[in-house]
Image (cartoon, rainbow, N blue to C red; front, top):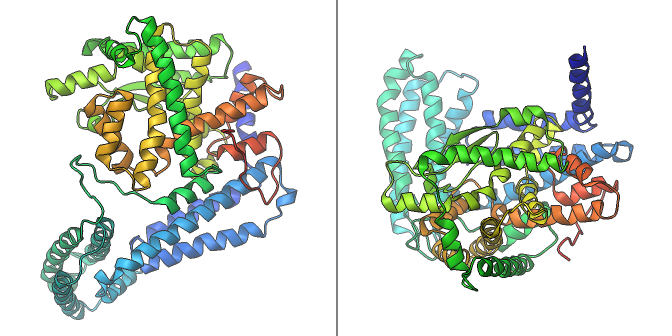
Length: 560
Protein backbone atom coordinates (compact mmCIF):
# COMPACT_ATOMS: atom_id res chain seq x y z
CA UNK A 1 0.00 0.00 0.00
CA UNK A 2 2.84 2.35 0.90
CA UNK A 3 4.59 1.66 -2.41
CA UNK A 4 1.36 2.34 -4.30
CA UNK A 5 1.00 5.66 -2.50
CA UNK A 6 4.56 6.64 -3.42
CA UNK A 7 3.92 5.73 -7.04
CA UNK A 8 0.76 7.80 -7.15
CA UNK A 9 2.48 10.69 -5.40
CA UNK A 10 5.32 10.60 -7.90
CA UNK A 11 2.82 10.50 -10.78
CA UNK A 12 1.07 13.61 -9.44
CA UNK A 13 4.40 15.44 -9.19
CA UNK A 14 5.20 14.55 -12.80
CA UNK A 15 1.74 15.65 -13.92
CA UNK A 16 2.18 19.00 -12.18
CA UNK A 17 5.25 19.67 -14.35
CA UNK A 18 3.79 18.34 -17.57
CA UNK A 19 0.54 19.82 -18.87
CA UNK A 20 0.53 23.60 -19.28
CA UNK A 21 -1.93 25.59 -21.37
CA UNK A 22 0.57 25.52 -24.28
CA UNK A 23 1.24 21.79 -24.14
CA UNK A 24 -1.37 20.87 -26.82
CA UNK A 25 -0.13 23.58 -29.20
CA UNK A 26 3.55 22.68 -28.81
CA UNK A 27 2.80 18.99 -29.24
CA UNK A 28 0.73 19.70 -32.36
CA UNK A 29 3.51 21.84 -33.80
CA UNK A 30 6.05 19.08 -33.28
CA UNK A 31 3.70 16.60 -34.96
CA UNK A 32 3.12 19.03 -37.86
CA UNK A 33 6.82 19.56 -38.36
CA UNK A 34 7.54 15.84 -38.37
CA UNK A 35 4.70 15.07 -40.78
CA UNK A 36 5.80 17.77 -43.23
CA UNK A 37 9.44 16.66 -43.10
CA UNK A 38 8.38 13.12 -43.96
CA UNK A 39 6.20 14.22 -46.86
CA UNK A 40 8.42 16.93 -48.33
CA UNK A 41 11.50 14.76 -48.26
CA UNK A 42 13.80 16.89 -50.41
CA UNK A 43 15.14 19.48 -47.92
CA UNK A 44 16.97 21.36 -50.70
CA UNK A 45 14.00 22.37 -52.83
CA UNK A 46 11.74 25.40 -53.21
CA UNK A 47 8.81 23.23 -52.18
CA UNK A 48 10.43 22.37 -48.85
CA UNK A 49 11.61 25.90 -48.02
CA UNK A 50 8.28 27.50 -48.86
CA UNK A 51 6.22 24.95 -46.95
CA UNK A 52 8.27 25.27 -43.78
CA UNK A 53 8.27 29.05 -44.04
CA UNK A 54 4.48 28.83 -43.99
CA UNK A 55 4.55 26.42 -41.04
CA UNK A 56 6.55 28.81 -38.85
CA UNK A 57 4.52 31.86 -39.85
CA UNK A 58 1.19 30.09 -39.31
CA UNK A 59 2.20 29.02 -35.80
CA UNK A 60 3.49 32.50 -34.94
CA UNK A 61 0.13 33.93 -36.05
CA UNK A 62 -1.71 31.35 -33.95
CA UNK A 63 0.50 32.08 -30.95
CA UNK A 64 -0.11 35.80 -31.23
CA UNK A 65 -3.88 35.20 -30.93
CA UNK A 66 -3.59 33.17 -27.71
CA UNK A 67 -4.82 34.70 -24.38
CA UNK A 68 -1.40 35.17 -22.76
CA UNK A 69 -2.59 37.08 -19.69
CA UNK A 70 -4.88 34.24 -18.64
CA UNK A 71 -2.06 31.69 -18.51
CA UNK A 72 -0.28 30.27 -15.48
CA UNK A 73 3.41 31.08 -15.01
CA UNK A 74 4.34 27.76 -16.58
CA UNK A 75 2.01 28.47 -19.48
CA UNK A 76 3.58 31.90 -19.95
CA UNK A 77 6.98 30.25 -19.84
CA UNK A 78 5.93 27.85 -22.60
CA UNK A 79 4.57 30.75 -24.66
CA UNK A 80 7.89 32.58 -24.46
CA UNK A 81 9.85 29.41 -25.29
CA UNK A 82 7.59 28.60 -28.24
CA UNK A 83 7.69 32.15 -29.63
CA UNK A 84 11.49 32.32 -29.34
CA UNK A 85 11.85 28.92 -31.01
CA UNK A 86 9.58 29.81 -33.94
CA UNK A 87 11.30 33.14 -34.54
CA UNK A 88 14.70 31.46 -34.47
CA UNK A 89 13.62 28.68 -36.85
CA UNK A 90 12.03 31.18 -39.23
CA UNK A 91 15.12 33.40 -39.31
CA UNK A 92 17.68 30.66 -39.92
CA UNK A 93 15.34 28.88 -42.34
CA UNK A 94 15.22 32.12 -44.29
CA UNK A 95 19.01 32.41 -44.33
CA UNK A 96 19.28 28.83 -45.58
CA UNK A 97 16.74 29.56 -48.34
CA UNK A 98 18.74 32.59 -49.49
CA UNK A 99 21.89 30.46 -49.64
CA UNK A 100 19.99 27.82 -51.63
CA UNK A 101 18.70 30.38 -54.14
CA UNK A 102 22.28 31.47 -54.91
CA UNK A 103 23.19 28.01 -56.21
CA UNK A 104 19.82 26.57 -57.30
CA UNK A 105 20.64 27.22 -60.97
CA UNK A 106 22.77 24.06 -60.89
CA UNK A 107 19.53 22.06 -61.06
CA UNK A 108 17.55 24.18 -63.52
CA UNK A 109 16.67 20.93 -65.31
CA UNK A 110 14.72 19.70 -62.25
CA UNK A 111 11.05 20.43 -63.10
CA UNK A 112 10.14 17.10 -64.68
CA UNK A 113 11.95 15.16 -61.94
CA UNK A 114 10.19 17.13 -59.21
CA UNK A 115 6.83 16.46 -60.86
CA UNK A 116 7.71 12.75 -60.93
CA UNK A 117 8.56 12.42 -57.24
CA UNK A 118 5.72 14.71 -56.14
CA UNK A 119 3.02 12.74 -58.01
CA UNK A 120 4.57 9.49 -56.75
CA UNK A 121 3.48 10.47 -53.21
CA UNK A 122 -0.11 9.79 -54.22
CA UNK A 123 0.85 6.68 -56.23
CA UNK A 124 -0.14 8.23 -59.58
CA UNK A 125 0.68 5.68 -62.28
CA UNK A 126 3.24 7.25 -64.65
CA UNK A 127 3.36 6.90 -68.41
CA UNK A 128 6.51 4.77 -68.33
CA UNK A 129 7.43 5.18 -72.00
CA UNK A 130 7.11 8.97 -71.82
CA UNK A 131 8.98 9.04 -68.50
CA UNK A 132 11.88 7.06 -69.96
CA UNK A 133 12.18 9.67 -72.69
CA UNK A 134 12.02 12.41 -70.03
CA UNK A 135 14.84 10.81 -68.02
CA UNK A 136 16.97 10.59 -71.16
CA UNK A 137 16.31 14.26 -71.90
CA UNK A 138 17.17 15.25 -68.31
CA UNK A 139 20.41 13.28 -68.56
CA UNK A 140 21.33 15.25 -71.69
CA UNK A 141 20.34 18.51 -69.98
CA UNK A 142 22.65 17.67 -67.05
CA UNK A 143 25.54 17.02 -69.45
CA UNK A 144 24.92 20.37 -71.14
CA UNK A 145 24.70 22.11 -67.77
CA UNK A 146 27.88 20.38 -66.68
CA UNK A 147 29.72 21.56 -69.80
CA UNK A 148 28.48 25.11 -69.20
CA UNK A 149 29.55 25.02 -65.55
CA UNK A 150 33.05 23.91 -66.55
CA UNK A 151 33.39 27.11 -68.58
CA UNK A 152 31.76 29.37 -65.97
CA UNK A 153 33.46 31.17 -63.13
CA UNK A 154 33.83 28.83 -60.13
CA UNK A 155 31.90 29.45 -56.92
CA UNK A 156 33.58 32.04 -54.71
CA UNK A 157 33.62 29.72 -51.69
CA UNK A 158 33.80 26.00 -51.00
CA UNK A 159 30.62 26.32 -48.93
CA UNK A 160 28.63 27.29 -52.03
CA UNK A 161 30.24 24.51 -54.05
CA UNK A 162 29.37 21.97 -51.37
CA UNK A 163 25.77 23.22 -51.11
CA UNK A 164 25.43 22.97 -54.90
CA UNK A 165 26.68 19.39 -54.78
CA UNK A 166 24.30 18.57 -51.91
CA UNK A 167 21.38 20.05 -53.87
CA UNK A 168 22.12 17.78 -56.82
CA UNK A 169 22.41 14.78 -54.50
CA UNK A 170 19.11 15.63 -52.76
CA UNK A 171 17.34 15.77 -56.13
CA UNK A 172 18.94 12.45 -57.17
CA UNK A 173 17.85 10.74 -53.94
CA UNK A 174 14.26 12.00 -54.21
CA UNK A 175 14.12 10.80 -57.82
CA UNK A 176 15.58 7.42 -56.87
CA UNK A 177 13.10 7.04 -54.00
CA UNK A 178 10.19 7.60 -56.40
CA UNK A 179 11.72 5.20 -58.93
CA UNK A 180 12.08 2.47 -56.29
CA UNK A 181 8.40 2.89 -55.40
CA UNK A 182 7.38 1.67 -58.85
CA UNK A 183 10.31 -0.55 -59.75
CA UNK A 184 9.46 -4.28 -59.85
CA UNK A 185 5.88 -3.57 -58.70
CA UNK A 186 4.88 -2.15 -62.07
CA UNK A 187 6.14 -4.43 -64.89
CA UNK A 188 5.71 -1.81 -67.63
CA UNK A 189 7.54 0.82 -65.54
CA UNK A 190 10.38 -1.59 -64.82
CA UNK A 191 10.77 -2.56 -68.51
CA UNK A 192 11.01 1.06 -69.71
CA UNK A 193 12.80 2.71 -66.78
CA UNK A 194 15.58 0.38 -65.63
CA UNK A 195 18.31 1.53 -68.00
CA UNK A 196 17.38 5.25 -68.10
CA UNK A 197 17.50 5.36 -64.29
CA UNK A 198 20.86 3.60 -64.08
CA UNK A 199 22.35 5.98 -66.63
CA UNK A 200 20.81 9.09 -65.03
CA UNK A 201 22.07 8.03 -61.60
CA UNK A 202 25.61 7.71 -62.91
CA UNK A 203 25.57 11.17 -64.50
CA UNK A 204 23.95 12.70 -61.41
CA UNK A 205 26.74 11.39 -59.16
CA UNK A 206 29.52 12.53 -61.46
CA UNK A 207 27.99 16.01 -61.85
CA UNK A 208 27.61 16.36 -58.09
CA UNK A 209 31.22 15.31 -57.53
CA UNK A 210 32.36 17.94 -60.05
CA UNK A 211 30.37 20.70 -58.36
CA UNK A 212 31.88 19.91 -54.96
CA UNK A 213 35.31 20.85 -56.30
CA UNK A 214 34.13 23.78 -58.50
CA UNK A 215 35.27 26.73 -56.39
CA UNK A 216 38.03 29.28 -56.03
CA UNK A 217 39.89 28.89 -52.76
CA UNK A 218 39.07 32.39 -51.54
CA UNK A 219 38.32 30.90 -48.12
CA UNK A 220 40.65 28.27 -46.74
CA UNK A 221 39.04 24.85 -46.98
CA UNK A 222 41.86 22.70 -45.64
CA UNK A 223 44.70 24.51 -43.87
CA UNK A 224 46.71 21.34 -43.42
CA UNK A 225 44.78 20.20 -40.35
CA UNK A 226 42.46 18.01 -42.38
CA UNK A 227 39.52 19.69 -40.61
CA UNK A 228 36.86 21.20 -42.84
CA UNK A 229 34.22 23.18 -41.03
CA UNK A 230 31.81 25.98 -41.89
CA UNK A 231 32.45 29.40 -40.29
CA UNK A 232 29.02 31.02 -39.93
CA UNK A 233 30.07 34.69 -39.76
CA UNK A 234 29.22 37.60 -37.50
CA UNK A 235 25.51 37.98 -38.39
CA UNK A 236 24.71 34.35 -37.55
CA UNK A 237 26.69 34.56 -34.30
CA UNK A 238 24.82 37.70 -33.24
CA UNK A 239 21.43 36.17 -34.07
CA UNK A 240 22.28 32.92 -32.26
CA UNK A 241 23.22 34.95 -29.17
CA UNK A 242 19.94 36.88 -29.39
CA UNK A 243 17.79 33.75 -29.64
CA UNK A 244 19.71 32.17 -26.74
CA UNK A 245 19.05 35.35 -24.71
CA UNK A 246 22.70 36.30 -24.27
CA UNK A 247 22.72 40.14 -24.42
CA UNK A 248 26.44 40.40 -25.15
CA UNK A 249 28.45 40.89 -28.33
CA UNK A 250 30.95 38.34 -29.63
CA UNK A 251 33.73 40.77 -28.71
CA UNK A 252 32.52 41.00 -25.11
CA UNK A 253 32.41 37.21 -24.84
CA UNK A 254 35.93 36.93 -26.24
CA UNK A 255 37.06 39.33 -23.53
CA UNK A 256 35.30 37.22 -20.90
CA UNK A 257 37.00 34.10 -22.22
CA UNK A 258 40.41 35.71 -21.77
CA UNK A 259 39.43 36.90 -18.29
CA UNK A 260 38.35 33.41 -17.23
CA UNK A 261 41.53 31.94 -18.69
CA UNK A 262 43.66 34.39 -16.69
CA UNK A 263 41.93 33.32 -13.44
CA UNK A 264 42.58 29.67 -14.25
CA UNK A 265 46.22 30.32 -15.04
CA UNK A 266 46.73 32.13 -11.73
CA UNK A 267 45.19 29.19 -9.85
CA UNK A 268 47.30 26.76 -11.89
CA UNK A 269 50.43 28.55 -10.76
CA UNK A 270 49.34 28.27 -7.10
CA UNK A 271 48.86 24.51 -7.47
CA UNK A 272 52.12 24.17 -9.38
CA UNK A 273 54.03 25.94 -6.62
CA UNK A 274 52.43 23.65 -4.05
CA UNK A 275 53.71 20.62 -6.00
CA UNK A 276 57.22 22.06 -6.22
CA UNK A 277 57.23 23.09 -9.89
CA UNK A 278 57.27 26.83 -9.23
CA UNK A 279 55.47 29.02 -11.73
CA UNK A 280 55.99 26.52 -14.56
CA UNK A 281 52.45 25.15 -14.38
CA UNK A 282 52.88 23.18 -17.60
CA UNK A 283 55.48 21.01 -15.83
CA UNK A 284 52.96 20.43 -13.05
CA UNK A 285 50.40 19.55 -15.73
CA UNK A 286 52.83 17.01 -17.20
CA UNK A 287 53.22 15.50 -13.75
CA UNK A 288 49.43 15.09 -13.46
CA UNK A 289 49.10 13.60 -16.97
CA UNK A 290 51.62 10.94 -16.04
CA UNK A 291 49.42 9.65 -13.22
CA UNK A 292 47.52 7.56 -15.79
CA UNK A 293 46.63 3.99 -14.86
CA UNK A 294 46.86 0.68 -16.79
CA UNK A 295 44.09 0.21 -19.32
CA UNK A 296 42.49 -2.79 -17.64
CA UNK A 297 42.04 -0.92 -14.35
CA UNK A 298 40.53 2.25 -15.75
CA UNK A 299 36.80 1.47 -16.29
CA UNK A 300 36.28 0.34 -12.69
CA UNK A 301 37.96 3.52 -11.43
CA UNK A 302 35.56 5.62 -13.53
CA UNK A 303 32.58 3.82 -11.96
CA UNK A 304 34.01 4.44 -8.49
CA UNK A 305 34.43 8.15 -9.27
CA UNK A 306 30.78 8.28 -10.31
CA UNK A 307 29.62 6.84 -7.00
CA UNK A 308 31.95 9.20 -5.13
CA UNK A 309 30.39 12.25 -6.79
CA UNK A 310 26.84 11.07 -5.93
CA UNK A 311 27.83 10.52 -2.32
CA UNK A 312 29.42 13.97 -2.14
CA UNK A 313 26.16 15.60 -3.29
CA UNK A 314 23.90 13.57 -1.01
CA UNK A 315 26.09 13.96 2.08
CA UNK A 316 25.71 17.74 1.70
CA UNK A 317 22.02 17.58 0.72
CA UNK A 318 22.63 19.68 -2.39
CA UNK A 319 20.15 18.05 -4.76
CA UNK A 320 17.33 15.51 -4.88
CA UNK A 321 18.61 12.49 -6.82
CA UNK A 322 15.89 9.93 -7.64
CA UNK A 323 16.77 6.33 -6.83
CA UNK A 324 15.90 5.32 -10.39
CA UNK A 325 18.46 7.78 -11.76
CA UNK A 326 21.11 6.25 -9.53
CA UNK A 327 20.10 2.75 -10.56
CA UNK A 328 19.98 3.12 -14.34
CA UNK A 329 23.30 4.69 -15.37
CA UNK A 330 25.88 2.37 -16.87
CA UNK A 331 29.24 2.30 -18.67
CA UNK A 332 30.42 1.58 -22.22
CA UNK A 333 33.78 1.92 -23.96
CA UNK A 334 34.49 4.27 -26.87
CA UNK A 335 35.89 2.83 -30.10
CA UNK A 336 39.34 3.82 -31.31
CA UNK A 337 37.77 5.41 -34.40
CA UNK A 338 35.36 7.49 -32.36
CA UNK A 339 38.17 8.67 -30.08
CA UNK A 340 39.57 10.60 -33.07
CA UNK A 341 36.62 12.94 -32.60
CA UNK A 342 35.83 12.40 -28.89
CA UNK A 343 39.11 11.78 -27.05
CA UNK A 344 37.52 12.10 -23.59
CA UNK A 345 34.25 11.06 -21.93
CA UNK A 346 30.81 11.35 -23.40
CA UNK A 347 27.83 10.90 -21.16
CA UNK A 348 24.15 10.53 -20.51
CA UNK A 349 22.46 7.40 -19.25
CA UNK A 350 25.66 5.62 -20.29
CA UNK A 351 29.09 7.11 -19.64
CA UNK A 352 31.30 6.35 -22.64
CA UNK A 353 34.89 5.87 -21.55
CA UNK A 354 37.89 6.71 -23.74
CA UNK A 355 41.05 4.67 -23.30
CA UNK A 356 43.51 2.92 -25.66
CA UNK A 357 42.81 -0.15 -27.74
CA UNK A 358 45.22 -2.59 -29.38
CA UNK A 359 44.63 -1.00 -32.79
CA UNK A 360 46.18 2.33 -31.74
CA UNK A 361 49.79 3.33 -32.32
CA UNK A 362 52.05 3.75 -29.30
CA UNK A 363 51.77 7.52 -29.59
CA UNK A 364 47.95 7.37 -29.77
CA UNK A 365 47.82 5.07 -26.73
CA UNK A 366 49.94 7.40 -24.62
CA UNK A 367 47.92 10.46 -25.62
CA UNK A 368 44.69 8.69 -24.70
CA UNK A 369 46.00 7.50 -21.33
CA UNK A 370 47.66 10.80 -20.41
CA UNK A 371 44.59 12.80 -21.47
CA UNK A 372 42.30 10.55 -19.40
CA UNK A 373 44.30 10.42 -16.19
CA UNK A 374 42.46 10.11 -12.82
CA UNK A 375 42.82 13.78 -11.83
CA UNK A 376 41.51 15.09 -15.17
CA UNK A 377 38.70 12.54 -15.15
CA UNK A 378 37.60 13.09 -11.57
CA UNK A 379 36.73 16.60 -12.66
CA UNK A 380 34.39 15.45 -15.42
CA UNK A 381 32.76 12.14 -14.44
CA UNK A 382 29.99 13.99 -12.58
CA UNK A 383 29.65 16.29 -15.61
CA UNK A 384 28.59 13.29 -17.69
CA UNK A 385 26.47 11.40 -15.13
CA UNK A 386 25.10 12.87 -11.87
CA UNK A 387 24.41 15.76 -11.43
CA UNK A 388 25.25 16.22 -15.11
CA UNK A 389 23.93 14.87 -18.39
CA UNK A 390 22.42 11.62 -17.13
CA UNK A 391 20.37 13.43 -14.50
CA UNK A 392 19.39 16.09 -17.04
CA UNK A 393 18.10 13.50 -19.49
CA UNK A 394 16.38 11.56 -16.73
CA UNK A 395 14.52 14.68 -15.58
CA UNK A 396 13.77 15.91 -19.09
CA UNK A 397 11.88 12.70 -19.81
CA UNK A 398 9.73 13.26 -16.73
CA UNK A 399 9.23 17.04 -16.42
CA UNK A 400 7.82 19.27 -19.19
CA UNK A 401 8.89 16.74 -21.87
CA UNK A 402 7.29 18.87 -24.58
CA UNK A 403 10.05 21.44 -23.97
CA UNK A 404 12.71 19.15 -25.41
CA UNK A 405 12.15 20.80 -28.80
CA UNK A 406 13.61 24.00 -27.28
CA UNK A 407 17.07 22.50 -26.79
CA UNK A 408 19.73 25.08 -25.91
CA UNK A 409 23.39 24.32 -25.11
CA UNK A 410 23.45 27.04 -22.46
CA UNK A 411 21.03 25.01 -20.31
CA UNK A 412 22.58 21.64 -21.23
CA UNK A 413 26.26 22.46 -20.77
CA UNK A 414 25.76 25.46 -18.49
CA UNK A 415 24.24 23.29 -15.75
CA UNK A 416 27.02 20.71 -15.95
CA UNK A 417 29.80 23.30 -15.93
CA UNK A 418 28.13 25.17 -13.09
CA UNK A 419 28.57 22.03 -11.00
CA UNK A 420 32.29 22.08 -11.72
CA UNK A 421 32.33 25.64 -10.34
CA UNK A 422 30.18 24.67 -7.35
CA UNK A 423 32.19 21.57 -6.49
CA UNK A 424 35.39 23.61 -6.65
CA UNK A 425 33.88 26.06 -4.15
CA UNK A 426 32.91 23.16 -1.89
CA UNK A 427 36.45 21.68 -1.81
CA UNK A 428 35.68 18.67 -3.98
CA UNK A 429 39.33 18.54 -5.14
CA UNK A 430 41.29 16.66 -2.48
CA UNK A 431 44.79 17.93 -3.31
CA UNK A 432 46.85 20.01 -5.74
CA UNK A 433 46.71 17.29 -8.44
CA UNK A 434 42.91 17.28 -8.28
CA UNK A 435 42.86 21.07 -8.50
CA UNK A 436 45.06 20.96 -11.60
CA UNK A 437 42.68 18.40 -13.10
CA UNK A 438 39.68 20.65 -12.51
CA UNK A 439 41.59 23.76 -13.66
CA UNK A 440 42.68 22.06 -16.87
CA UNK A 441 39.05 21.61 -17.87
CA UNK A 442 38.01 25.04 -16.66
CA UNK A 443 40.86 26.55 -18.68
CA UNK A 444 39.76 24.44 -21.64
CA UNK A 445 36.21 25.82 -21.44
CA UNK A 446 37.55 29.38 -21.35
CA UNK A 447 39.69 28.53 -24.39
CA UNK A 448 36.61 27.17 -26.17
CA UNK A 449 35.07 30.65 -26.07
CA UNK A 450 38.16 32.11 -27.67
CA UNK A 451 38.89 29.56 -30.38
CA UNK A 452 35.27 28.89 -31.43
CA UNK A 453 34.36 32.57 -31.79
CA UNK A 454 37.58 33.44 -33.60
CA UNK A 455 36.94 30.56 -35.99
CA UNK A 456 33.31 31.43 -36.71
CA UNK A 457 34.21 35.10 -37.15
CA UNK A 458 36.70 34.01 -39.86
CA UNK A 459 39.70 35.14 -37.83
CA UNK A 460 41.33 31.74 -37.13
CA UNK A 461 41.80 28.56 -39.13
CA UNK A 462 41.30 25.10 -37.56
CA UNK A 463 45.09 24.68 -37.31
CA UNK A 464 45.37 27.89 -35.32
CA UNK A 465 42.65 26.58 -32.99
CA UNK A 466 44.60 23.33 -32.50
CA UNK A 467 47.83 25.21 -31.78
CA UNK A 468 45.99 27.43 -29.29
CA UNK A 469 44.72 24.42 -27.33
CA UNK A 470 48.17 22.85 -27.27
CA UNK A 471 50.09 26.01 -26.39
CA UNK A 472 47.67 27.75 -24.02
CA UNK A 473 45.83 24.84 -22.37
CA UNK A 474 48.40 22.06 -22.53
CA UNK A 475 46.40 19.52 -24.56
CA UNK A 476 48.01 16.51 -26.13
CA UNK A 477 48.18 17.41 -29.85
CA UNK A 478 46.06 14.47 -31.01
CA UNK A 479 43.45 15.32 -28.39
CA UNK A 480 43.47 18.98 -29.47
CA UNK A 481 42.95 17.92 -33.08
CA UNK A 482 40.05 15.69 -32.04
CA UNK A 483 38.51 18.52 -30.01
CA UNK A 484 38.66 20.98 -32.91
CA UNK A 485 37.35 18.37 -35.37
CA UNK A 486 34.45 17.63 -33.03
CA UNK A 487 33.70 21.36 -32.70
CA UNK A 488 33.63 22.20 -36.40
CA UNK A 489 32.84 19.00 -38.31
CA UNK A 490 30.27 17.53 -35.94
CA UNK A 491 26.61 18.40 -35.50
CA UNK A 492 27.27 21.16 -32.98
CA UNK A 493 25.92 24.68 -33.48
CA UNK A 494 28.32 27.64 -33.61
CA UNK A 495 27.68 28.62 -29.97
CA UNK A 496 27.95 25.14 -28.50
CA UNK A 497 31.56 25.32 -27.37
CA UNK A 498 31.27 28.74 -25.72
CA UNK A 499 27.97 27.70 -24.09
CA UNK A 500 29.83 25.58 -21.50
CA UNK A 501 31.55 28.46 -19.74
CA UNK A 502 29.03 31.20 -20.53
CA UNK A 503 26.08 29.00 -19.53
CA UNK A 504 27.92 27.97 -16.37
CA UNK A 505 28.47 31.61 -15.46
CA UNK A 506 24.76 32.27 -16.05
CA UNK A 507 23.70 29.48 -13.68
CA UNK A 508 26.31 30.53 -11.12
CA UNK A 509 25.09 34.13 -11.21
CA UNK A 510 21.44 33.05 -10.96
CA UNK A 511 22.21 30.78 -8.00
CA UNK A 512 23.87 33.69 -6.19
CA UNK A 513 20.92 35.96 -6.96
CA UNK A 514 18.26 33.52 -5.72
CA UNK A 515 20.10 31.76 -2.88
CA UNK A 516 22.18 34.55 -1.36
CA UNK A 517 19.07 36.74 -1.21
CA UNK A 518 17.26 34.05 0.79
CA UNK A 519 14.55 33.51 -1.83
CA UNK A 520 15.55 29.83 -2.16
CA UNK A 521 17.76 27.35 -0.41
CA UNK A 522 20.56 25.92 -2.54
CA UNK A 523 18.78 22.57 -2.77
CA UNK A 524 15.49 24.25 -3.76
CA UNK A 525 17.34 26.16 -6.47
CA UNK A 526 18.95 23.01 -7.87
CA UNK A 527 15.73 20.98 -7.75
CA UNK A 528 13.74 23.70 -9.48
CA UNK A 529 16.35 24.29 -12.18
CA UNK A 530 16.76 20.64 -13.15
CA UNK A 531 13.00 20.08 -13.52
CA UNK A 532 12.38 22.94 -15.99
CA UNK A 533 13.74 21.15 -19.07
CA UNK A 534 15.42 23.04 -21.94
CA UNK A 535 15.11 26.79 -21.61
CA UNK A 536 17.31 29.86 -22.07
CA UNK A 537 18.61 30.62 -18.59
CA UNK A 538 17.44 34.23 -18.56
CA UNK A 539 13.92 32.99 -19.23
CA UNK A 540 14.25 30.50 -16.38
CA UNK A 541 15.37 33.41 -14.19
CA UNK A 542 12.21 35.31 -15.12
CA UNK A 543 10.14 32.24 -14.19
CA UNK A 544 11.86 32.00 -10.80
CA UNK A 545 11.20 35.69 -10.18
CA UNK A 546 7.61 35.30 -11.46
CA UNK A 547 8.12 38.15 -13.91
CA UNK A 548 7.10 37.12 -17.44
CA UNK A 549 5.52 39.99 -19.42
CA UNK A 550 4.25 39.13 -22.88
CA UNK A 551 6.81 41.45 -24.51
CA UNK A 552 9.69 39.82 -22.60
CA UNK A 553 13.11 40.95 -23.84
CA UNK A 554 16.60 39.75 -22.92
CA UNK A 555 18.44 42.32 -20.78
CA UNK A 556 20.21 40.33 -18.02
CA UNK A 557 23.89 41.35 -17.91
CA UNK A 558 24.92 38.36 -15.84
CA UNK A 559 28.64 38.91 -16.38
CA UNK A 560 28.48 42.41 -14.87
